[in-house]
Image (cartoon, rainbow, N blue to C red; front, top):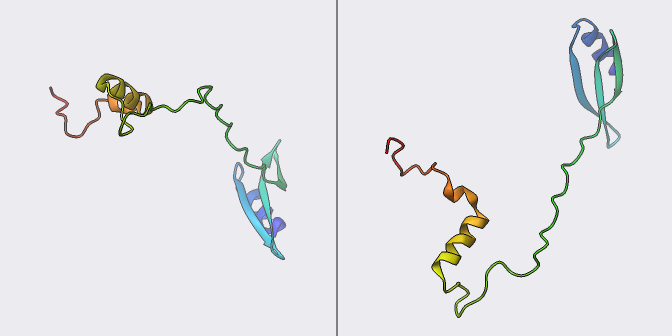
Length: 100
């Protein structure tokens, strides 16, 4: 299989093919491409997961509970909503006329 793909890549300089070969229930990532002027066959590099975001140092709940779980101060509640979703401040509201 790898030889067949390598022949195709050899006929097309600059081409790289990444594929997954399955055999007996095992999957093998494969890369066939050009390196230093010749075609090479090897294992596809494993994808690196994105870095983990650090957890917040604050361990207290973001909302202070009032009688019904809502802050009494409307300004504090609005500030908390904006902190949770900064896109609320964007001027991308479809209901707003951009010409204004």
